[in-house]
Image (cartoon, rainbow, N blue to C red):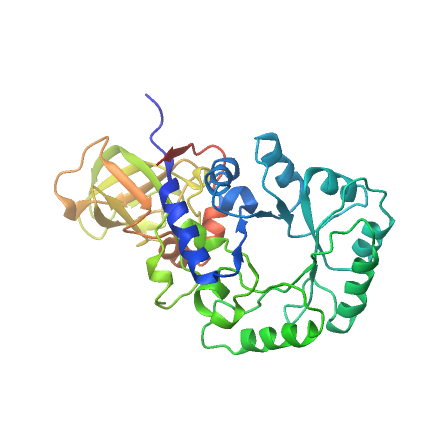
Length: 360
């Protein structure tokens, strides 16, 4: 019998979330972002699910794109970090990878490449994130250079990325939207501003191209309720089972470093799930876990392969009973908040050890 820890991935929920993104973006296009192993959900399976729906896919780097090509994915794939070495330009042109360009070195590599096929480029502009991107004053010259380059596709997209898109009361995004539109004025080029927060919460950010990522996996990027985000369907259910049950007396401790001590006679259930399976090690005592559909508190330190929960108030609990670590009734975002991190991290850090079981 297999160890019960597994991640159930509902591909119909992926389709639902993509269709929501596409409907909000219309008539603009929604490029589906599947970087970081599709945020931990399995890049190949998710890409195959979305390929019939999305005009293009997005990954961080050429290695992620090549994995998809090797699996038979034929849709265009945007490399969101562009190229790291000049030889990647020819590979991109040959494999129909689109390049996000953000600095002069990347532009020069494209200009100097000897290509048989044209390559499609996006120009990234730094409108306030100050991480990657051309300076605003560089944009028009860079655009002219790419237009003049015979082996660059004439349909050049101009893009930016939001620093505070998940903060609905912060006017930083509005300033970034205005900045990009002003920088691109007169170029008559398609724009791409909206990531998941932009698509859901900033209507003015929706443009010719949009980049849904985190929302595809059914999690809100906001820490407050938001009308469109409420329509998302969680994709992953992290599931396991009880593997041991024991009674302890008041004053006894549980787990490494004895970080939790029973204040009353208690029933403790041990679950096959630990940080080696992707559960956050820093989840503190009291973090909710669903056992037989009911919330119980995590007690004791998270270890590599196991966690322990206090099931004293549940009544009957037995070896083999179902445990949900996150899913529809208990979101990854809620667990992340307890652990002092964000849903993006707990999902993308899901290791390969945890089997992905695909349904629908």
